[in-house]
Image (cartoon, rainbow, N blue to C red; front, side, top):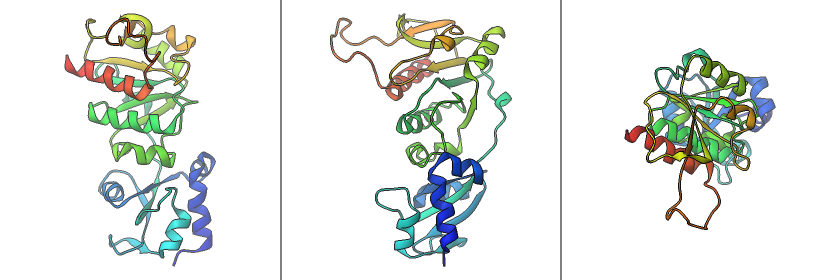
Length: 243
């Protein structure tokens, strides 16, 4: 039987402060929990409303509703230890690495992590003020990609500057950039994606070596003034992988 203390502890994981203090996050759904149990991540505890897994503690549906972060609670919830990754393992001189500058919407971040997984990008480097990748909304939006993609948080401006000093190619999307469909792109480097409303910050822009532009169709289309950052990331990653 789940205790009141456990319920409070799990509910605290909805907030970043609670996740930092406990060094854990929550994941919900039978499929996602099954993936986590089979992964390199350490699953501390599994709760379920039916005996789906041998190590699960079976709890009442009303208790699941109390600990769930979903509008409609699922049958399974896991408390998972937050993994610790080494930023040095992100090697943009050999692979493509995504960099996110102040991407603050959890849904966007979750989708971008899922896109990175789809396009074989194993590292994402985020500015410290980007959304927390272990936010329950982000975890659910990744559809399991959070297991395979390493997300790092750092002083992004400084990290990009360091990469540029090593002659790493740094790409960014801008309204005055070169047509992404006609520009030669490499198989390694950093792709910087900016904030939902303000784009790439001037500080990070200083390190960009290749300015790209995703043109509308037709070219003089007077429609939307910009693309959602997750959609722009999908187009950009697809173009890099197409070559």
